[in-house]
Image 1 (spheres, rainbow, N blue to C red):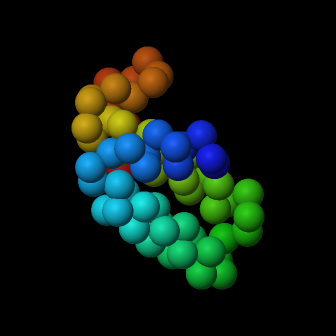
Image 2 (cartoon, rainbow, N blue to C red):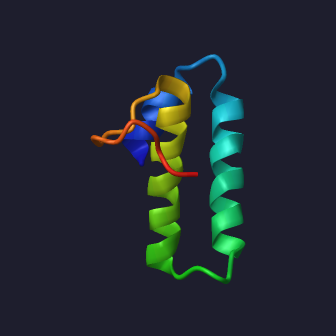
Image 3 (cartoon, rainbow, N blue to C red):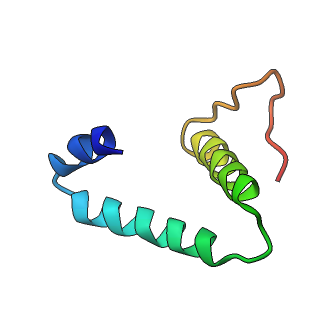
Length: 67
């Protein structure tokens, strides 16, 4: 985690990045429907979906990611 913080702390928009991450983590921690493993899977899926939305790269052979 320190590696990521070191990278983020030099950015101009670091406060917004940190706040966004805190909101995501807080939301997942408060979600009682998911166990710890499912919370991590949720983050992985969200990263894959965001990567696709931003760069249209799915990381697999399918043309589209399911929604």
